Length: 258
Image 1 (cartoon, helix red, strand yellow):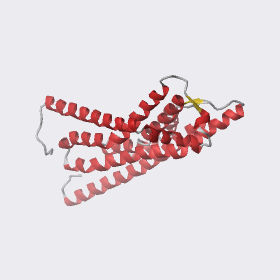
Image 2 (cartoon, one colour; image 1 turned 60 degrees about the vertical axis):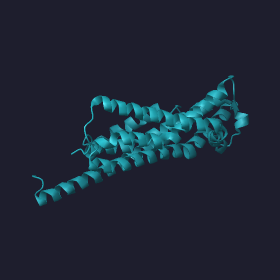
Image 3 (tube, helix red, strand yellow; image 1 turned 180 degrees about the vertical axis):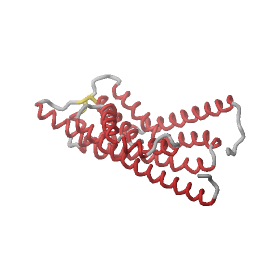
Image 4 (spheres, helix red, strand yellow; image 1 turned 180 degrees about the horizontal axis):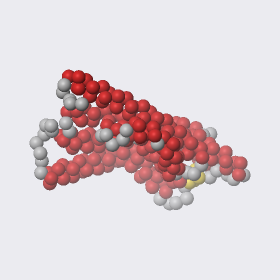
């Protein structure tokens, strides 16, 4: 049973409106802080290029008059989203907690925590492993083609930001699969039966997510996504086994009719 007093629909809309307002204020505050501290963010943005063995001052160019300002705004929004994410999750939790049962409430913190860890894990994997390798590959490819590496700052920042966000979202796959399993929408037997189809879907999804069409980026995204798919399968099997055990115990006690 729910342990909260039912609210009229309009009051729910009012609560949702305040959640959106507070989330936007948190995002705006985080973005303002990052806008002021642009230089440390730029250092973070340029580190993968340095790790690839390139000098940003020699490789990157600014062609448009307002391009540096556009890059600063982009970094501020991304950094603001990262800074404000815990507050946004807290506001969302405040909104949905009253409607949850005690058993659902116990799952709320683990779900949010795992989701945040997977998102950050995807970003870190891309930042420290994939981006330097990808940039080094394209730089070497340019030399092989006999052309000089000369990228614009805006193009480079767009590429890095898209890659980081893409990998962060892609690493949320286990959480989605497990939630569908907990809700009874998806079963481990289905995942096992359609494993080959899943591989094709993962490769297609990786090709759509990555901002480039090179096979290296595709491989680096598709491989961990498939490993996460297999991990999701085993976790889902463990959850189903636990549910069967609990049901068998309830039947033995006579609480549930088989």
